Image 1 (cartoon, rainbow, N blue to C red):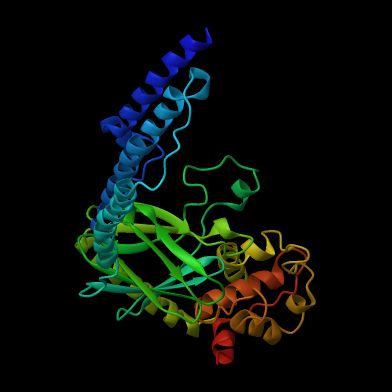
Image 2 (image 1 turned 45 degrees about the horizontal axis):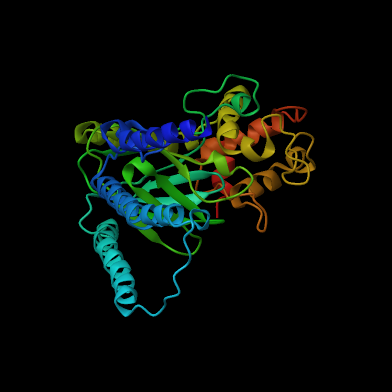
Length: 375
């Protein structure tokens, strides 16, 4: 019975391997995702080539070896042959691996050179990584915004059913035109992060104090998702990357809208807002920028992130509260939000913190108060 089961299982395994190597294998969940760029296609083809080379090495090396072990086993009466120093064989098994390595190195080098060819780009976006968000700045266009995780906290805490794009959704995606070469210039402000979108064939580290670059050109409109690929803190999974590719005409309209929105935000700095308006806007700003550390309920994470509910800083002088939000706290995870948020958003989030949970101070911080404290 045992022999029968073994004779059936081997063909079954080989058949499964052939099936996966054929057209049906392209849909196999463990394969690389379908490429959306020229670079991703090159990586996909290189991956397939090296996989077949490894499969060939397996057939040439391991199949004869396992056959020899079985055919010349001691229980069948075979004795080991006392031979050594076979020059022809030694030369052959030195040259063969060298040729295989050359055969793998040539196409690999070609792909790496193509990945590093960031010249002649149509658009350059500076990407700054912070715990736990990406900031995108369209160089030469005066457009800059932060991209935060958009998955509701209730899903993360298992109080709601998880969505289709759990931990892979953001409030503001990186928008780029299709058919255009987009160059990314990457850096980080705190620890090492990695901007990674598999379908685009881009995975580039963002390192504090250094500038790295990468590029892609997306063929078709669509939404492409990835995430940070470094262990960048306790909320490592909270830095998704979402790229939305649109036709060039639609991209031009989006860019124009971003400029108008930025101009409107700057114009709004001069007016005063009611406390209710500030608190409502500040709640959304807090959820996108502060809740990951200080938590939605303002209780923080004991021993890691301080609570804001009942905090002497939040309930104390407004200027001190504003200063730490603007400039951050060196040596801690508290970031400087001066360059990340507008005067209105900063005034709104500080007003919200001073009037949320048990902090009913009644203070309404206005955008002009923020502008006066900016360095």
